Length: 247
Image (cartoon, rainbow, N blue to C red; front, side, top):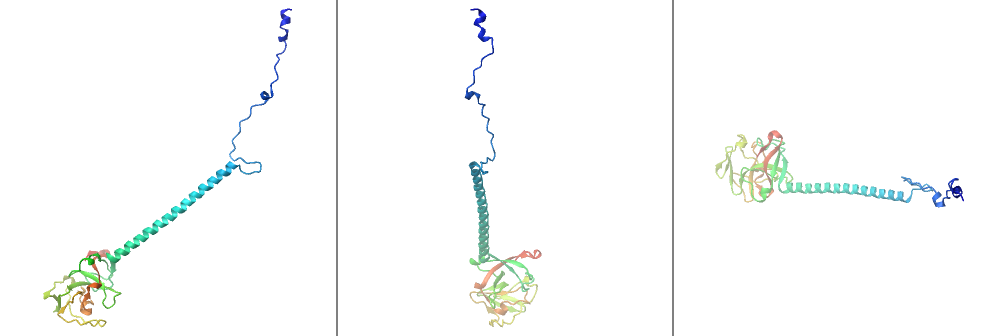
């Protein structure tokens, strides 16, 4: 057999074996992610429903947090107001109080409509002294508060002579009266207390007079004042601005 006869099988077209089924199938395409997958019935998938449920819970938690924050703010405000009220009440009851003077009985020391501060705390430990300006309940009408100057304490003898005030025989120097004379007054018709001079101030009482001696209803009219009805010691005038001063 010749060489050509031996190689005849390979001179024709190249034989390629038929591919198997597995080899003939094209490679699967990569699946594209869908943001809002929807099933055949047009409904959201379970994963989307879970996400929405989670978002609803987050919204509910945030809303609940806002409500709690608002309620806490309201409670904090109420607590502050209650504490402020208690402090203000305690201060007014036991320490300080504001008064507006409606009359001119303390001219020229205190003008009409002046606002002043009365101090109470020290009265629990000490008594007011002669010369102090004090507030006290009106002996005729306890619902009213009067303001006068303390002239004499219990056991002292008060006398009015020649337009001047004498305490225990000593003539008082009173520049705050602006030179007005201190004349006796008729006893108050409401009290009818007998006041004659010289007058000894009883135990537990004080003698008070207004600086405006010509226009003041004071101990000359209603007699001595019980120490128990003294409400404060006047400290300073706080309004109006032009009248601000210590007393």
